[in-house]
Length: 398
Ligand SMILES: *Cc1c(COP(=O)(O)O)cnc(C)c1O
Image (cartoon, rainbow, N blue to C red):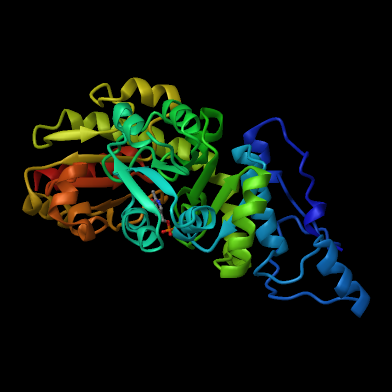
């Protein structure tokens, strides 16, 4: 019988490329080539005694809100990729962010977070957690002195995103982790923009990594998903009980899509990141473009840090045109690149953050994190780079 214990926690392939294709494969008695999709909510027992024993030992699947073989394959493969002790899959990236924070924090605790966050993460930190008595302090993530000051008197957790969405500001993960640990805080990072391929937060000192698997891990626009990666003790004490009893579990169908996504995530992210750098460089010398932001461009204020903590700059760049109407004119002139607020997809996608993903923030909060009316975000896909550039160039000139 298949069970979670069939995945060998010590089965490490030497290279990431091999792990992504073969890691955590649980073959059934039918000897299938591809990972099986177990679309089942429940499990049956040989006897009443076996059912009783299953609830005592907790070493087999009893209900898919708790665990499922296809979901377990996804969790184990991602865990091997990240180099974490434990991985919990969730129904979406936001479910992962919320479960990591709400599972860990209690009324009276303080969390310090970088201000430049994905819109919904900002809502959790600034609005939802404070309703339950959690004190939430938002700081400029680039400013180490601001972190230091906010951490005075201690904190329970630090939450950060690097690079940030959409302004691509970096947080020095190693330096902030050191300060956070000295203040007694646990460090959680939303590593979506860098992806598990380009940035290894646990090696930099972070304690908990959260993903929207919707982005690069699927990367083909098919499904929502998320994950929390942590130590065994954080998983057992905070993540597992919260997920089991509040229910944001990943569906086995979506887990299967994500397992197959992991097989190609390295190839996709490396190719998309190389294309993003090339497009960023070309945009920078375009006369109609005011400003380009990409972590590994020499013009990025944190380029040294980017090269230190990321393997490459990532699949997303932003650039600025004169104002909202020039941004809209440009987007409406695109013929290949789609207008969409998703990122990390194999299709190149463009959005105007001020009127879409970050509309809810309001003009003041947008200005504070540097989201102007002329700012455009481009998530670079897998199309031919010359064809993409032609599309961008004709749209900018339109
Ligand atoms: C998309 C995204 C999320 C949320 O993920 P969902 O899967 O859409 O719930 C969180 N953080 C960042 C940085 C994201 O890009």
